[in-house]
Each structure stands twice: as C-alpha cells, then as structure tokens.
Image (cartoon, rainbow, N blue to C red; front, top):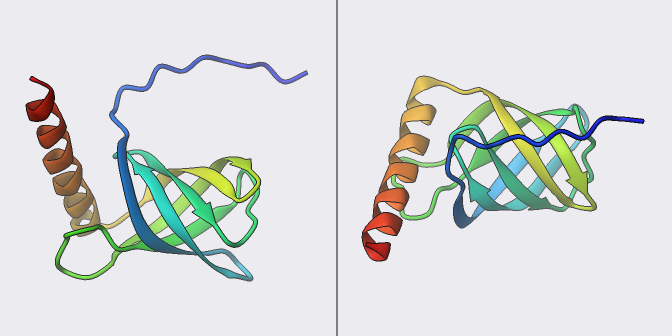
Length: 115
C-alpha cells in the first residue's frame, strides 16, 4: 500500500486562467492553466497524461508581452481525468524571470487588496 504523506508548500499558488499547449512524445495537447507557482501548476487539458510523464509546455501569460513562455520540461505529478498537476523541472532563465515577475505582480496585488 503506498504511503500518503503530507507536504507543506513553501510557495504561493496564484489563480490564473490562460491558454497553454503541452507536448508529449506522441501528442500535442491544448489546455487552460488553472493556477501557477514558481515550482509548478495545474492544468485542465484535452489530451490524457499519466503521472511521471515528461512534457514540454508553452503558455501565454495574461497581460504579459514578449510572446509565449516556454518551459522545457515538466513532470506530471498527479492526474484526475483531464485535470493534472505538474512540477517544473527545466526552463530557461528568461522564462523563469518572466514567470517570477508575473507571480510577484499578482502576489503583491493580492496582499495589497487584503491589507
């Protein structure tokens, strides 16, 4: 029986809706990004994936100039039908900077509206 372990996240998930494409060895899927963090994200897609699968992802952040952000490698961590979560494994520094800037802007806005 697999063990279940509780993991405390040390990062914030930002709710966001934007279009993305994900590519496996033999398919190209289209989906919607549901939330984003610096370490991973949640997707609802049109192609079935399985845990452990490695994908290349291209996403278009809302209100973000500079074209799509490419993530060179993510690993599927969990799957529930066409909803799945991934962990970011490899991305170029410019993509990391763009995602970081997007998250920082969203998190600063969230905190300023609460306080």
